Length: 137
Image (cartoon, rainbow, N blue to C red):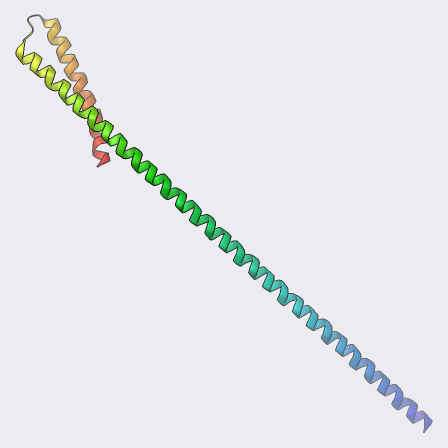
């Protein structure tokens, strides 16, 4: 009977050791799962923060681009005015040259050639402005 009690006692002790080991494993598993969960939450928070930072950076860059476009538009307006003034000046010069040719016909060939050459330069300049003028509209 003592032998039977010793076997029962050993069996119980073994059973308790198995339960303790099982509890230890369960506790370790829970800790690992908790650690994984916390790491996942931290990763998600980090990704969210990176997204927000990136969004702010993109919005800042868009505002900067809008400012640059406004400045470019203002520069374009100024350039357009300068081109108009130049165009009007060239037209006035052209009209004056034609008036001079009509009022005082040159007797020698040299003044006629000079006038014709000046007229060609004016026409060439007007032609070179034609494409930029069209692109401004």
